Length: 391
Ligand SMILES: Cc1cc2nc3c(=O)[nH]c(=O)nc-3n(C[C@H](O)[C@H](O)[C@H](O)COP(=O)(O)OP(=O)(O)OC[C@H]3O[C@@H](n4cnc5c(N)ncnc54)[C@H](O)[C@@H]3O)c2cc1C
Image (cartoon, rainbow, N blue to C red; front, side, top):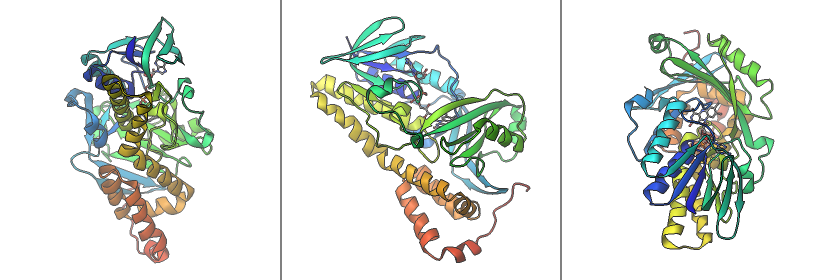
């Protein structure tokens, strides 16, 4: 009988595994793929995500440190800088493999190439049926990501409005060419996919380029991506990978009596930016902590609620704010993005309040006060262009 069985070895499962091992829980992590494995992702890790790790990320895992962001809309752009780093660029294949090694290092058992087929909750334990065996655990953390159906043991299926779609392609190029190709920045392009955006990230030896959008608005997503690549001079015969991104915020149910959800399985993704790695890591750690407290101090099963409350406390307001922000910006795309690329203050404040301060609430209030309620027309007229894509 394990104290904790973790389904999935992505950032959430691996971080939970490490935290559980460090707390002395007898833990089994089951991952269906053999690592290292490919994962469709832009590979941008925020400094908040980095701060959640309880170890230093080795230099060889970090492909690039990027301090600059360029936000484009219909031929115009605005740039912002966040020193020392706005984001780190990592390859998910390498990063996820490293996190799983860090989980192993904490003394947990890891089975790869074994798929969990079912989790059956009993009074005193959970029966976990896999392609290879049946395992018993006092608690099970489902960290299966956005795919899979095990999460529906805890929460209902998402509505079409509660998830988005991401498509990504990796386009190889010489490192020198990537560094010299301006702009050497995180590039975000609004206005190319309704209810979403396109990105180009300059990794080591390749560009990650992709689009995200809300499922209900993103028609012919592959065509949108191919057009976007072409416009950015990145077209060619490159594989395209797609994946679901849950964006409904923090309201979903994340616990049953002995089951917990974390990361994408719980829906912990910033609905505006699509950032999910950080919340996957942090929620995995919090889930392991909640289980460890119950096991170590013989607490009641109902104490599992502390997992939900600590997630709410740590990033609940932030994710709820991201949903509001997504609704405002994508409901009025013309006005919002035109305003954003024509006024550097909007981006600078976003970098300060949201990226550094992790506070959407203050930012949204500031936006509304300064641009929606206070003489919007005269303000719009007084704006100056930062630059155009032709520069
Ligand atoms: C196109 C795209 C771009 C993105 N870009 C970014 C970005 O730049 N920055 C960012 O922060 N976020 C980004 N995200 C979001 C980010 O990828 C996710 O939030 C993050 O991967 C969630 O981690 P996780 O551990 O919850 O799930 P995952 O990383 O999906 O890991 C789940 C693991 O569970 C395993 N698994 C699934 N089912 C089973 C089963 N039945 N049995 C055993 N194992 C199983 C899977 O093989 C997988 O390894 C992006 C997402 C997409 C789709």
